[in-house]
Length: 166
Length: 108
Image (cartoon, rainbow over all chains, first blue to last red; front, side, top):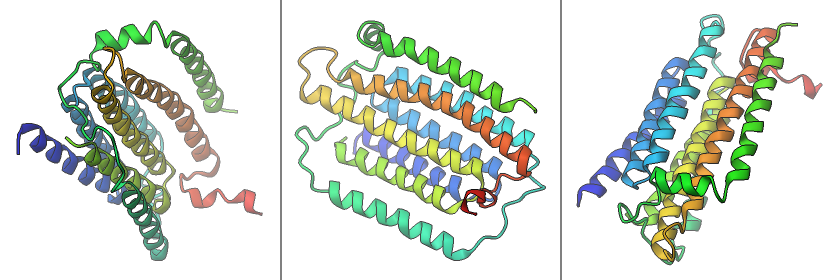
């Protein structure tokens, strides 16, 4: 077992455990913090796969910006006033069974699939570096990149309109 | 690492997100589970991008599209979160709760 395998299993265990803690913890703030742990584990996977730009963007955008936004919304909403009521136990069981069945079906469908190159070449190439990604982003994908600015503008206008008090 | 392990890891994370959406009633936690599902798909896209580059690496930029898709998914997710959280805050202002069970007025 070499170093990449050890890193893969370590990060996978952290990711799955913290994802389970996200959906099981009672306090929503703890859920946010566990979700940040999950995002850091996924960023570790990106680094192992030599996709350094995406790892940094994942930490900055997801763990930095989006999760802080979630925490701000928790600050605005009085959480003690509305703790989640004790809901029907059967709903939880049914949801667990449904999700577990989905996982079983997808794993069973993809277990014996014949993939030509059965290896996610770790550390063998440098397509994930910012130099190559940036050149491709500003030549081939320059129109979607500019369109995303329009998307952000409309999202900003939508958030302001929705958040206005009237 | 073999690509199968990444597929199974992404399936596990996605299913955990699905279970969270189905079982939790807090709207913000449902939203966080959707983010978890988006991230599992991102992980799988990066793994497939590296695999494709290794399998058919004719040019130095083969398979770079997958990682750019991940970048655009992050862009869309950021816009989605800003609008979605505004909707949740508005919902809290109107019904004084973030429990999705109270949002059943369309049923009647």
